[in-house]
Every structure is written in structure tokens, then in C-alpha cells.
Image 1 (cartoon, one colour):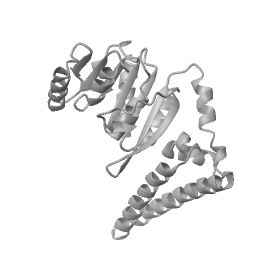
Image 2 (cartoon, rainbow, N blue to C red):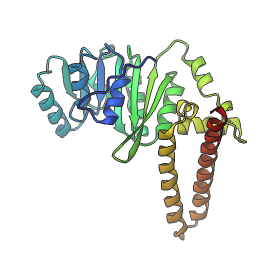
Image 3 (cartoon, rainbow, N blue to C red):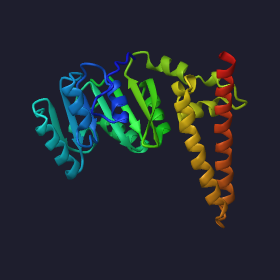
Image 4 (cartoon, rainbow, N blue to C red):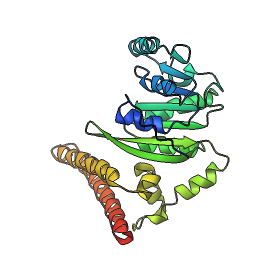
Length: 267
């Protein structure tokens, strides 16, 4: 997937990274648009000829409409109320952006939209789950979308993963190669290593950098905190749950150590 670095002026670091993954010339639907910042920028910058900003709640809908009107973009950005992809017609857009939601919700929006034919003609999905990234990757894989790009962005002390997927005729073959986890030099079953790729990102693990390390340092800190909290519990399931968390900490640590060793040997 060819990326055009736009470095959107006036956008946050997270939204700027999302804008970079929108194909030039694409008609865009931004689902859960949050003041229509992204569609307004894409159209104003000339990257998109037109866009749809979708909102399900009245407050954000009014804020989005007010922004678009104030920016003089009402003829090119349609602000619509509706649940998920209900705001677009089949074939109306080429690119769908869903950002700032949980992975389970993003997957459910895509599933409902696909069932209703709303993804007809869509060639690119740009998705930014706040949590549950593995659920989004699994949906893309199961539905035959090729995960073309993964990025990690840090903003205000939080780490965000941004995924761009394409509808390609050879997606199944490309995905088979992408989710071949043999490059991970871990003494774990192949299926367990594939689960790690779904959890941590096949491209991110192939191209590790400081952002990946920063994100997973943060995740390990959260897991350590959860482990300490569970340890205080008298629940019959507490010991089992804590053991699961400790195993997850150990496995993530093994992956990061493996990647660090590979980087050292290749430098």
C-alpha cells in the first residue's frame, strides 16, 4: 500500500497518522467522526473530493454539522446521523475510517455493514481501535481483507495502533504469508505464535521499533498491576486468573527479547 505523508496541519498526531493512510482521491466515510475533524481536513487539503461524517448521537452530530458549515464544506462533506455504516449507501465511498472505538465494536460495525452491502465498492479500511486490536485483525483475516499497513502512534501518554486494510484479489495468499509466524524464534506451537501476531501485529513484529517497545512496556506495566490486584483477592478463581496473567507477561517478555536479539544480530 503506497502511503502519502500528509502530516495534517491542525490534526492531532493520531488523526494525522490516520489521514496519511487514506488513499489520495478516495471518497471517505468517517464513522463516529467526532466533530468531523478528519473529513474536514481531508477535503480541505484536497486529499478527498468528498466525505461522509457519521454520528449516532445528537451532540456530536450537531458539533460536526456546525464545524462543516463554519468551514464552508457543506457541499462536499455530508454529516449524517446513523448507526455505523448505515450512514452510507452501497458504492458511495471508497474508504471507510473507524477510529477511537474498541476493537469489538469496530468489528461489529464492519460485520453489520458487510451484511447490509455497505462495503460494496470500498477498497480501503483505516481502523484505529483503542483496545482489542486482535479482534479487528481477526475480522479482517476471516473476511479476506489484506492487512497492508500497521502503525503505532503515541499521543498524550497513550499508544494507538492504526491498521489499514485493502480488498485485493490475492488477499488470501498475502494473508497466509503475513501470518506465517516462523520468523518468531520462540519455542511455542505454530498456532500460538499466530495468535501472537494477531495480538501484537504481524507488521509491527516484523518491523520492530521504539514505538512497539514503548507500547508493550506500557502493556506489561498494566498486566503487572492487574496481577497485584488479583493477588489480593480471595476469589476461588483468583489463583487461576493470576497464573494466566503471569503467563501472558512471560510470553510478551519472550517476544520482546526475541525481537531485541534479532535486531542486535542484524545490526
